[in-house]
Image 1: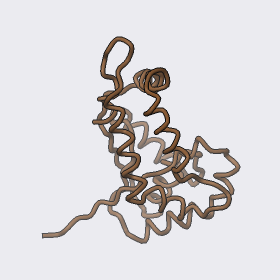
Image 2: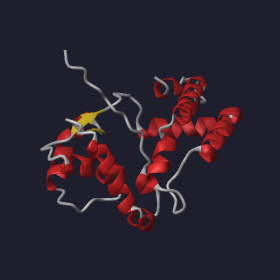
Image 3: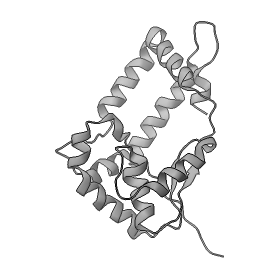
Image 4: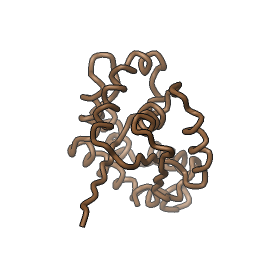
Length: 176
């Protein structure tokens, strides 16, 4: 029996950074993608809404080396293209949270859950980021370290306690 491995890699939301920084980091991004390609994955899967898979495939097939700032393209598309993959694959947590639910969740935390609010701030301060001083590979290693993942998981689990003003447990869906 052939043993299959799955490599999951957490990533930064690159569109939240200044475009110039991502442009400056392009060589480092390509080096990191090269390391991923060296592993010879047979598939590249990206977090994306399954209902929009056709749009993702169109975006991938139309991409000819000019990548948007989005991490999906900067890393996922680059790797898949370098490997000669004809398509990328979609993975989705299948959660039911909408953007409105997320807004309600964070509003409720802000208004009535000071301990969780402080925990969010503390995690933000310790979470690795992309910056000029640190190599991309090192930032990604830190982001994907066991300690960083466990800290974020604990934070997400704390959201299960959050209720909106109507008593609806809105944080439970987030922490599934």
